[in-house]
Amino acid sequence: MIHNNSKINKKNPPILEFDKVGYKYQNFAALSDITFSVHEGEKIVLLGANGSGKSTLLKIIDGLVFADKGTYKAFGEIINQKYFDIEKKSYDFRSKIGFVFQDSDVQLFSSTVFDEVVFAPLHMGFDKNEILQKTKSAMQMMGIEHLSKRAPYRLSGGEKKRVAIASVLSYSPAVWLFDEPTSGLDPRSQSRLIDFIFELNSMNNTVITATHNLSIVQDIADRVIVLSENHKIVADDIPEKILSDSDLLKKYNLIHEHIHRHRGKTHEHIHTHHLIHKH
Amino acid sequence: MSFIEKNLENITGAIQNSVFSETIAKKDGFLQRLDPRTKIVCFILFLLAVNLSVNLYFIISVYIFLLIFAGISKISLKFFITRVWLFLPFFTGIIALPAIFNFFTPGKPLLTLINNPQQHFFIAVTQNGLLTALFLLTRVATSVSLGILLVLTTPWIRLLKALDRLHAPQILIIMTMMTYRYIFVLLETVNSMFLARKSRMVGRFTQWENRHLVSSALGTLFGKTQVLSEEIYQAMLSRGYRNKIYILSDFSLTILDFWSIVATTAIIFGLFLIWRTQ
Image (cartoon, rainbow over the protein chains, first blue to last red):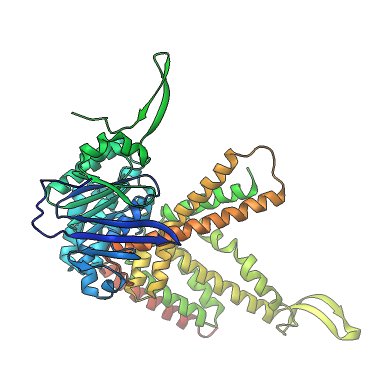
């Protein structure tokens, strides 16, 4: 399948480009032959079963791990270990891409919420007034000012996620990466998060979300890339097409056969959550 | 509940109460109002004075001052004294004990335990020995009390930030910060691991089986810690970390801080002048 989204201006060169990228983790392939590109303002979902390589792909995008094969270019430059040796380039890259990790406990490594949110602007060399202003505004936007002096470990799952987002929001990156953002969140927090991602994209930010939660795909994506359990891209298209292709979803372990009793009769059907919608 | 589970629960509870609740540090007492940097400087001055002094009365006087500071900082004296003196005999006491006898510290015998005049052999507690042991005990007790007073009246994170501002080695500060942040996460993981094991247990396990389970739990925890530390490092890199940590502190010195340093110096010199002839 070929991605074709008319909303995105493709006259400009892509901001992220993957060319036959492969990555091995301790001799096990985590990604294989990955080729795709991302344009500014796109809203992409990386869809795949557990272990398909979604998180690894996000880490390559964020320059946290580096491709073993092929090339990855961000903003026109090849991203590898050498690239980060130059301090200015490193800060420039980091300030453009923000990563919200799946496990908020990983992301929230500071001792207080304030220290967490202030970490990025402080380490990216902004001046003190700018640091404080950015921190304050990020905390206000996420409604966490009252948690400022609290220790992250004492927060609820939803609060932790809001702090994790504020810690990225404080340096306003142009590209946002979310790894399984709704995992462990209650329905209200999930809904808030989806609204936030929508809002981010409406401000022309590029948003890439890795998930296997089909129920949120239509809300947060205008393009879906499906990864197989062989760690390859097997589909790249608009959400409507991907979500209506039940054979594809079944083949790549995103939906399953489900047997249950209903009105006194046992019957079998495909189990998926993406048809749940709101008005 | 097994010995290990009970201990784990107690350790978790103790860490939660003593490190994270910071109830005393939140009280509106004298030491709580001081800038942490001032407290560190004052306490270092006291620590140097106590450990360089050769006058027992001087050390005891400093200890009395510490009790007064604890009192005006709204710390229960019973809690403060027992916290130090309950464990002191087990650690310093054991080291100091041999020093009281004549074969280590000769001097005027106060209490003779074994006396064999024919072989010119005796074991006795000597005055000098007792004095030496007392010196060691009071010195350690006063030094430990200083540390406890500092930690009890200062929130952990402010203490670490103050150490950073005073140019303490950064690796020490980062390691302490990370330990403070993740010790509870890891303790909770351990608790969950034992709870999960308990939910699948039927009957009693032999000691060998218990040891085997504990060692495999330790291995699993080590693996989890490694994965966690790698991901934390990546999360730090992602937000601009480049092997140097910057800490934003909001400390401000007041007139109280100035007078505290003056008062500390005055107390040390005053006590020195009072007891110099003893």
